[in-house]
Length: 405
Image (cartoon, rainbow, N blue to C red; front, side, top):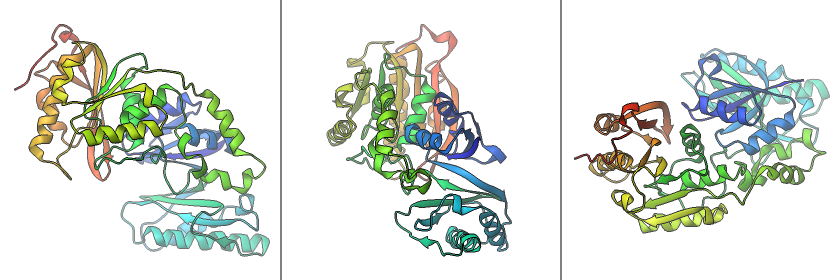
């Protein structure tokens, strides 16, 4: 029997998530009910959801959906939520000894907050089990056996079992050095997927910071699961439903898809020696140190490393000039990216940029005979941003080496 599932992700990359889920054998649809950040699908059994959560690189969470419905935005909406949660036979998922907690994400304007939803939903679970079995289910706020999620977006409520856990999937487990403006791994993976990059093609990140984009690319090339470095942190491991399974053995089986011998053409540079040293530490922790070349280098000097037309992809998270640095330096970094792209990108090359200032690039790309082929409106932390996929115009195959002043 097919099980309905909900995957949550960064707003704006839902179609990229669908692309990845299709590669993992899951049919999915983005933004059902018009809700950003939600991707819906079906799996043949709950264990399949566990495997997809372990392998995916572009989701935050995977929920096995047990109930859903409409709720009011007023205080009476809490009663709606209570009824939806209480409609579920929780004894199928919780043994008498099992502990549980409720976590909630709420989006939109309501006369109640996430803690209200969690408290109301927890009581509904307890009341249902008391009604059916006569015992009071034990609540445990940290590391419970079962993590129930009750997410409310607008007037839509979805109740399910969280298969990922307290830390969402952007917490990969390999980062030991943090750049102050690092991109999260989910967005980095989405940028790589939308670039159509292949491991045999040269990829460059000329402002690599702590190396997340290149490390994600290396792990994708080697077909390493998104959850490989956080094996013990998945909520599905403690579910009573899976008590007969050995997840250490299962994850070992799932990891047979990986090929650690694959090499990729990856180059990362940054003007900061400190950040390059940190990126190397992260790459070493991610077991891809031998797959990426690193150099302390100003992006303007990239042409000293790469000949014209030799780079297939530049994927980069440039400075925004918002939380650190200056706006003037950030704007210069954006100008430099367009110049570098004109110098080194191949005729079918791609420049993929995440930026808080798309207007800076929009002013420059026509001068360099480039064009925006795709754009995704996302959040970088709590800042609105866009992922832009920029390529050469069809008529510009001969125009390389454009310099902008």
